[in-house]
Amino acid sequence: MENLAIARVFEEIADLLEIKGENPFKIRAYRNASETIAHATEQLSRCTEAQLRAISGIGKELAAKIREFAETGEIRYHRDLLEQFPPTILDLLHLQGVGPKTVALLYGQAGISTLDELEAACRDGRLRELKGMGKKKEELILKALAERKQRTGRHLMPDAAEAAGLLLEYLHAQCPEVNFSVVGSLRRGVDTTGDIDILATGVDPRVMPAFTSYKLVDRILGQGDTKSSVLLWGGFQADLRLVPEQSRGAALQYFTGSKAHNILLRDRANLRGFKLNEYGLFRLDTGVATAGQREEDIYEQLGLASIPPELREGRGEIEAAERGELPGLISLDDIRGDIHAHTTATDGREDIETMALAARDAGLSYLAITDHSKALAMANGLDEHRAIEHARRVREIGSRLDGITLLAGIECDIKPDGTMDLADDCLAELDVVVASIHSAFNQEAAQMTDRVLRAVANPYVDIMGHPTGRLLLKREPYKVDVPALVDAAAAAGVALEINCQVDRLDLCDTHAKLARDKGVKIVISTDSHAKGGFRLMKWGVTVARRAWLSAEDVLNTRTVEGFKAGLRRNVKRSSD
Ligand code: DGT
Ligand code: CA
Ligand code: CA
Ligand code: ZN
Image (cartoon, rainbow, N blue to C red; front, side):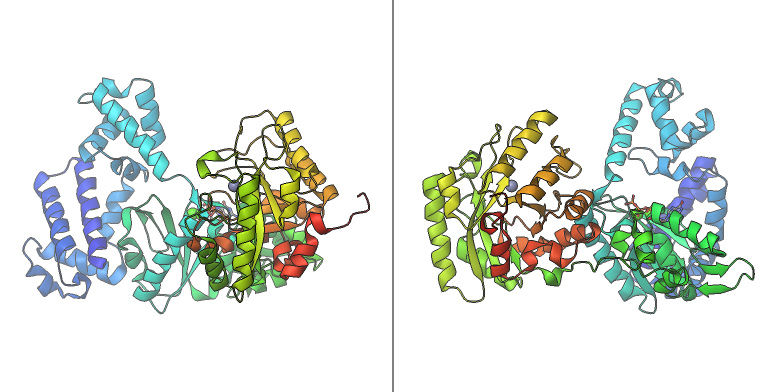
């Protein structure tokens, strides 16, 4: 793996030399060597200088540089070259279709050194005026800029978590003495991730080269002793920071963030006569470190209970920690049932029994089968007759399975006028009704809110499914007034769903917290359409944790009897 890292540095040296307009033979020598190194079968960092020089195309100078890299994790000459340009010059170089010759032109003739400057030059027609450019090149560059923006944009948190998991596994294997942790928004469980932040603690010069030579690295964006950044295939940017072991806790704290939380914590430290940074918590008067190795010590020294990463958003968690009033957050183990799943009766991939057994294997003790209603024609939604027949089959299969209780439910469409897609006497026959919107997303706020409130008013609606309809990075929520929905749900005893589909995570954290604050019960459901879907439960739990929810706030942490008793249809209310 390290060979690739060395090859990339040589390649970059060649590029930088070319931008500088240096001797073509020298440039060629670095390019050829890079090629050779990338394809070498032996681990070059373990070779002696003599062994290296035996390789064709590697002379005394290049062999020395390879040794330098093996020993220190970098090449001084490379760093010196980098320092002769603005650091953003590599962003230009890494654009599809932009080589060192073009960069030399852009930088040398027009002083362009950032992507923003490049885009501006394209847009105002300056670029095509440059010698050797033109309309065609301009189009090419604009396209590359657009693609890059897309690749380095935000990603769904579960996708980033998977990419980070693989990277961490690799790093652990490469440097077993070093501690690696995921920090940043991913550790806080934010629903989308800008970049993947990883913290390494310990001393091992192999950490940075191991990171930059990871096989899924597309490009190296920056490489240093304490910080490197790479772009992974799939468009994830990953940052790795290395700090000494005695700063582990402080660095975990600092790089987990959020920025808002960190600012509040730093101010608190200052008020109490401390300085807080990524290396530790220091007394302002003496400069002595009072905490650094353990993250919880930092909070403790500042008079705070340990704050779970999911709560670190500057939304009142510091005050709550000071008063000792942080909630005991829900965890995946607390979940006992899943209240939203589809089968082959509509748009699911598996039959009732397969889904039931998969839910049991996932550790659940009850499952509500909630297929679609007839308005969703493309999903072959159920009409009243089929819904009742399906419920009978669900109950029949449930009665002969051990270890899992099946509930006969439905995910009933809320029609554009707010009426339910199935007749009340049908809904009354079922164990649980999830009401969802799958049509007319573009209604204006007043109409949409009215529609949703009408559904809440239906006595057979127990749960509002994916209540805002958002699709992360794809579709805005529809214009429902969420506070109004929350108030209505509280009054009616209707529960709100946190849907675990990775692109939904709907309700979101802040709305779910609002619901909790208003006493609305939450249900966390996977909306599984196949037997693998139950493993998504953890993502909904992450949202719930970010919403400050405890197990008591979530209906499907109860036993099946307790769950049923908590449903709106079964609760006798004073207003009824
Ligand atoms: P992201 O990447 O947009 O999903 O969000 P984060 O929170 O991961 O942000 P990122 O990657 O820019 O930085 C990681 C953490 O490092 C951040 O949550 C807090 C810390 N950090 C970054 N910049 C600053 C800063 O200027 N001041 C303070 N106090 N902390 C910072
Ligand atoms: Ca980040
Ligand atoms: Ca970052
Ligand atoms: Zn749905």
